[in-house]
Length: 184
Image (cartoon, rainbow, N blue to C red; front, side, top):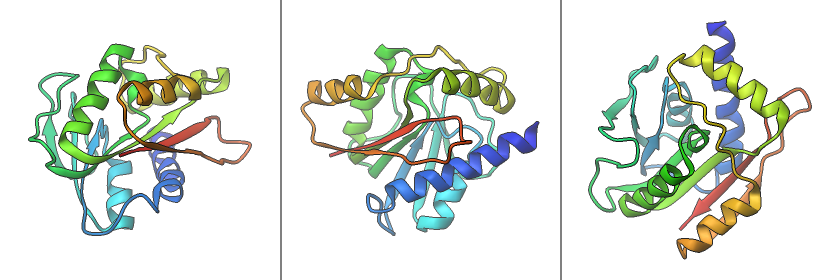
């Protein structure tokens, strides 16, 4: 089961890289919020050759990356504009909708750009997300607080930020539908 969890992380990182490669530049300092086991962070770090720092409310890293443990689920312990970019990879649906808003606001405070890579709500995605995440970490919160595409756009409009959207193409056998956003 752990092999399956690692495989899904590596595969997801390849989807993510293909989606955001024009949004990230070498030599940037990037924060990965909700880095989890850090497998995706390490894959991004290898590909982009940038300085990554991970943070999460729990520390269950399998890859040893720079890491800061969050003291609160809705506050990022960093100074203003400390990072070039902040990235959320399938993280926000593990928090309440109120916490999602607070984390986006915090990420806009500490970085110049914010990249969101999130699941869109589908029945197949719900089932797969629950199963795979329980393999990754049994303590992980899974409140199913997914947002539809238009709901995300309304959130960004409420923050009065510019954004770009990319729907992620994935093979038929992959159970998730992803969307990516660049906020700036």
